[in-house]
Image (cartoon, rainbow, N blue to C red):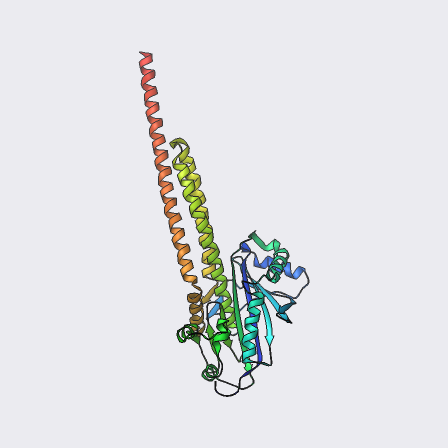
Length: 373
C-alpha cells in the first residue's frame, strides 16, 4: 500500500443485535413508561440530514440510551455505549458502540474482529440476553402479545469520521485493505473472493465511502451523518421480522394439513362446522401476517434520495430480505387457497345436509299421508 498506514482519529465499531420481542409494540406507551422511570428521555428516531419527503421512517422507532457496559475483549476490557430502538412491528434493536481513536488501520480491523468474537452470534456471552431481559421488563406494559422467539439478527458496522491524513474515497481504497475488516479472515482471500466481498461499494461525494457485506459494513463519513447506519438497521429489522413470519408459516403449514386431513375423515354432519372453524382460523392468520408484513415493508419510505435508495436496495438484496418476503407471500397464498377450498367444502357439506333434510322431510310427509289414508 502506498504511504504510511492511516490512523483513525475518530471512529467506532458498533455491534447490533436485533430480536423479535412481541407481535407489536405500543410506541407512545413505551415512551411514557421510559419517562416514568425518570431516566434519560427517549426520542423518536429520524434520519439526521435527509429531508423527510425524501426518506423517512414509516413509524419512527423509539430510541433510548442505557448505561455503558464493560466489554471483555480478550485480555482487554473496554466500555461500550448502549442504545436501543423499539420498532412498532415488535422488533428490539440493541447497539453496542465502542469508540476508536488513535488506532492504526490494522489495529482498527483487529478491534472489529475481536468485538465480533466477543459478542457475535457464535459467542456464549450473556450480555445480549441480559440487556434483552431488562428491556422486556421495562417495556412490558407496551408489548402487545410478547414473544420469546429465537430468531435473531446481528450486524457489525465500522465507521470512520476522520483519519490523521485527509483522504478521498479513491485514495482510501488504495491505502487500506478493507478485506480483513469486512471478512474477519486473517488468511489472504482469493482474487475472486475479494472482488465479491467489495462488490457493493457506494460514494455520493468524493470523500465518503460505504461498503456493504452480508454481516458487516464499513462507512467513511467525514460529516458524521448517521443516515446510512439507520438505513442498514431498518433493513436488518425488516429481515428479522420476515424470517420470523417465514418460520411461523413453516410451522403452521404442516399443522394446517393435519387439521384438514382430520376434518376430511369426519362425518359430513360434523365436518361442515369443523371446516368453517378451520377456515376462520386460517383467515385470521392470513390477516395477522399480512398486516404485520405491510408494516415491515413500510418501515422505511425511500422516495427522492437516490443515494440512500441505492444503499437500501443493495442491503435488502445482500440480506436476501426480498427472497424471504417472497417465500412468506407464497406460503400465505397456499393458506388462502386452502381457505378457499375449505370454504367450498363447508358450503358443499351444508348443501348436502340441507338436501338430506329436505329428502327426510319429504319422506316424512309421504309416510304421514299414507298413514292418514
